[in-house]
Length: 270
Length: 270
Image (tube, rainbow over all chains, first blue to last red; front, side):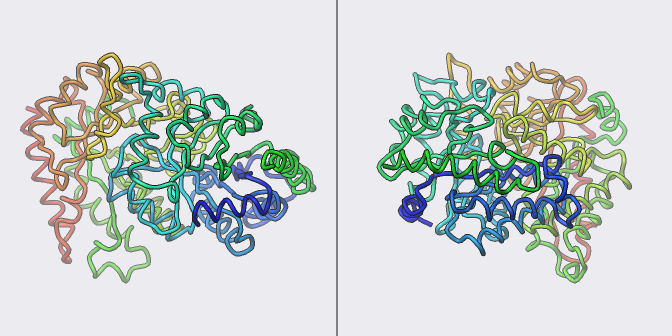
């Protein structure tokens, strides 16, 4: 998928919502727990209920890996299900991988060849050769961590050399590795005002913005500082949508929550 | 396992070798490919052949994930096999994970509760709350990336604020999160002279040193600059040992290669 194709889906759905599938087994509604694969059953219903309002789904790989082999199977089934039933949804494997070149190549195989995700989140610490193997796949994307939404972002991401902070250097240097058609950046919504500074360095790239909802970020602030002429935003909400309710109607309530966000987004898309 | 217990194993085996299980399916000797789980069969023979000369094994998770659910199964079987048959070997899941707190908690479950590894490699970019969930397990270890062995290390790890480079800041700040009994650092052997600077900041911690062998690092240089009074080193070799030979004798040749390194190490241990 190119940036233009993603933008067309955003215009069609009038949404730039990404639904985060942080499917923690302990939070799955009880009536689903007797199925063979409760994580997949939960995801399937969330996906079917919210796909109308979302342009992307983002399974966070940690929530699958913690269930071992069965968890990896749930992840694979989830991505296949989206690809087969909702081909107008972008799939982000939120994996935060990154290793020396010949190892990152194996991670790229895992997420692009084996799981068929459209994008994978990658950590920048190890530099170019840890990222570039992911960029050699046509139509696939790297979403590189720049400025994250958590408290620990303060520990190293603001470390500044000659006034240039680490997250700014990541944005500047990594633009030489890919293009705005195969690279996005993670910028947390809990620091929405920082999006202005991010846009000064990366005006054209899509940004994946976590931190709306449970983490407290404001959508209007994200739009104010981060939207560009092709939208340029994928705003993620996980817990506030998928775990809004734990009754048998959880999927309908999730759809309502997703629709509320989509309606607000439609307003911002003009 | 505590640092003292690890040191005792090092003294007993007269080795600080870590054998990296970067088990790429395409490199497995042909006669093993007809088994149900060639990756595990290969690992089992390598482990049995080299355990006498090694204090640690380090499966690199990427090489398992790229085989999907079956790969995860091979990884789980490999770690179980080491734990059951070679309890005097330390198991490092080389995963380079790290995410916001509630997500890192899930990764910690995956590697410590589900897979039962002794240690997991973690990337520092997201700061304290991305690392600390791994530190809450008694007897388990975080091995934090500091200065890596690849070319891309130059991109960000030397970014300096007031003369303090990023890898130095990682070493300094992260020492407040854990202790030398639950935290080690990755420092690449391809930059052995840098170990002196690392030791100025972290004199007591164990260092996991990749880059010996295929990546070209020198063991004598690593020892010269990095060894401390409790050894303080785990030196990894992957491809140069496990893929030294592709015949039916691959395990015997791997054992010879591991023994060569162990003999050199015994000399340095005095």
